Image 1 (spheres, rainbow, N blue to C red):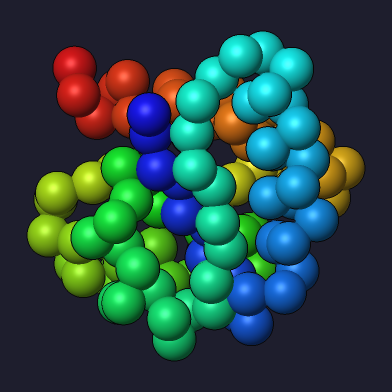
Image 2: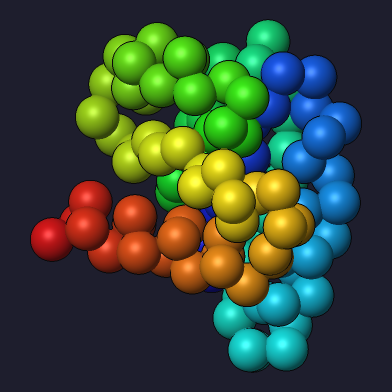
Length: 104
């Protein structure tokens, strides 16, 4: 089971996306834990995650988050269009793609 952490400015804007991702995971029989936090809570949550995805509105934090995790987990920015569409399946696929690339 993989743990997927979403980070946005306040932790609220990704809550609907988390719900959509969880639904997509259930429909595709993918076991994972998905949760969202604010940027200020990321330091207290990243060690529980296998991947950290940033909402496009906080893409400016990418290098800071990569420094924070120290290369232990992948960090990526969610595609703006996918995020705007609240496409849970596409973001779930992005999370797994990023993890696969990181482990390769």
